[in-house]
Image (cartoon, rainbow, N blue to C red; front, side, top):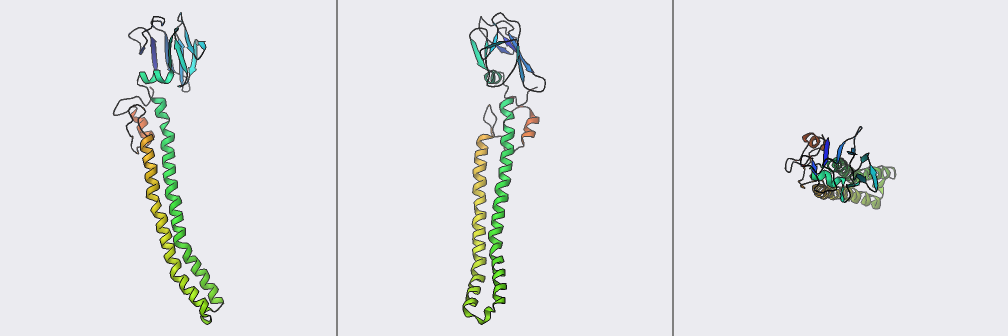
Length: 216
């Protein structure tokens, strides 16, 4: 990728400023990734921050001055030429976290549901064994307690399990609502659905606004 910068109309990024050279600088892909800005031996120079540069690796939040007065951040410059690849790359972590959280909610709540549903039956089994040892049939009080437990414990387990299971849709809906806000094209805000980030990366640009998602 080469983005030429200067006053001449055939540059990728045109700056209408008399202190900027006709062909002032070039922004290109660096070895091993990232972007490198090179000044084309201009009279008024190129600054990254407060430092005049000849060639320097730059980051999206770097502030660049071309000539004397024209200042712009690298991210603004990239957006002006429809390059949103850095913004799009950050969506990968967002998608991965969404999938992990969705699985976590489902597995955690399913585990709790099963615990609530099965634990009462385990309690009944243990109590039954104890009553057998104590001959509960000869003890009316113990017999009544075991009978009540045999009826109430399963009902309670089913109720608690159903209540826990009912939480899952709400939790997943809240997660999905936030995902719809965050997982969007960084330029036009189009929701990208639940399409894996890798699949979108292969498309290279937004189907709606044509913003570049992949730097070539």
